[in-house]
Length: 207
Image (cartoon, rainbow, N blue to C red; front, top):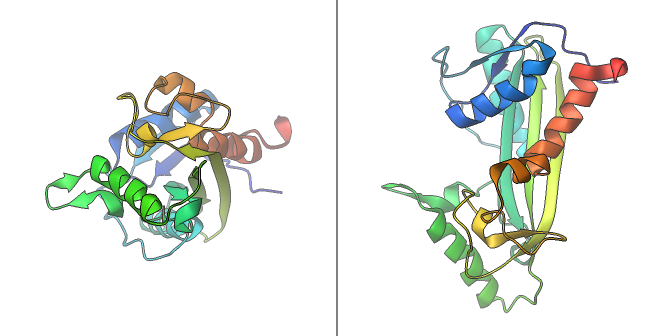
């Protein structure tokens, strides 16, 4: 059985204001106050692992150790079966340029590499989200959420971010870039991971 969260304050191990706000809103119904790594001026640790779980653990444990608070981290990415799971944990790295992240460039690279391999349609893909809740004593709980689908070209929609405009969830015809944030968050990789987290750690046997 997962360890229950018994505190009143949780550190969100992220410097991403949008992600911190989203997590805070999710946990508000449980009376949990959230504080971010940026609020406490904590440095972002180097993510040196090759798995979502590994990098999520690095971020959560570093934040918990530095703050003395339980810490929740999120590591997510995008994988394409024809590319042997790439870009995977390196999804953001594929978008890096000297001027900042360019996901149009990253999506073009994904498609070009599939074309170079003459990958058959449908070109299956998935978004992944790994949540790690770590305590200062070194204990942690891991929750993984995945949404499967396929990639399409050219990208469509301006409502999402990252690789959203080229991803079509299974059973859908619209890309993640064409559906509203509310609709996407109701059944996204992050939403699925959070549902597992809440049921196991915040609701526990009271659910």
